[in-house]
Length: 467
Image 1 (cartoon, rainbow, N blue to C red):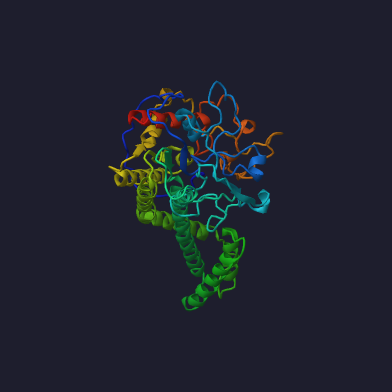
Image 2: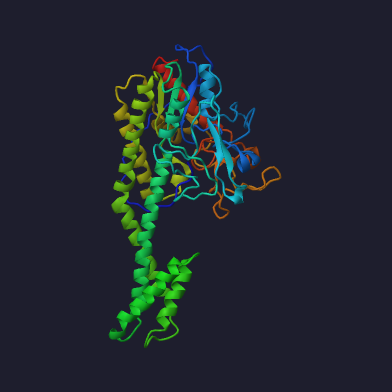
């Protein structure tokens, strides 16, 4: 996962009632069930080091949190461990290791790092992974084209790879964890943004041409002027490195050559009107298509994930499958920086994914759904009950340049919170005690946040008699 992009969408949010309660600190215990191993499928929230290679490793990173803390952060007893690592210790099995490592980075980030498989490792989760689509956030593949080049192997393939490794079936004595959906939210939003932007660009060009054609005094000359100015706009827009300024310049130049046009042309009022038309068209597209192009596809992803769990995990012999639903991603710092309409859309996407996932898994033997959605809303609403001191600000200063962290190369200098906690460590934390912050970056938890997640899974398993 990574930060949300801005999107203006008018879509009402269906709010859920948050359940309150403090964390249940989990400790190593003699479980009611003797598990032999932990097998994990998921995205960055479960990734224990897929991308801890190359430039990422050189920058002291590798997991999506605060990396490298071996003892404590401030007064927190929690080291830099993912919730799956904490859970493994709690159920008494070997610590998880990444099933695959590598990067498809651009040359600016040191170039690709070969993909290496580790046959004895059982954590298949990868940052950027989606449920079915292989192109997730951070991928080097089109249309994402990220210089970071995360591997983003989807869960359907993660499960298939595990089955191939173990001879086609689970033993029934392992604990399987599944957690996904966040990257589907991000990519669906990106797709909607791209289409809304295209609609806005088309409206801008049309209004710009129309405003300049109106400057031609003779109506008989206006059709030819529209063709000339429209061609200039289209050519400028298609040119490499095109900007609104270059497009407007080309349009004004073409308009200046039309018969009877008074010079010089003042494009400011025409550009202002065109910009307003673009904003209106983009918002209208998002409003009219948000449900069909963002919310409903999340339901499809939820059903697909449930199908894989039933047919390829439980159906292949797994008897203990903890499915962690999607947190309230509309409450992350990234989402809160957006409009109310966007946050409503994000909330609906998460709700619908979770509802479909739970519905499709109902009555499936050996499946336990862990409700982190409700828990995450409670943490935001009642941080003190969980020992949290900050639930709105990222702990990591991802554009910091220090002797130990010479700039991470993964953030936009114009956007101080645009980077990823994949390269966050003790050298680029914000001043003060951030040990009990909930968020490391704009979407990922701190080590303390992961501890809260591990505690929730542990508590839910206890309630089900699995511990």
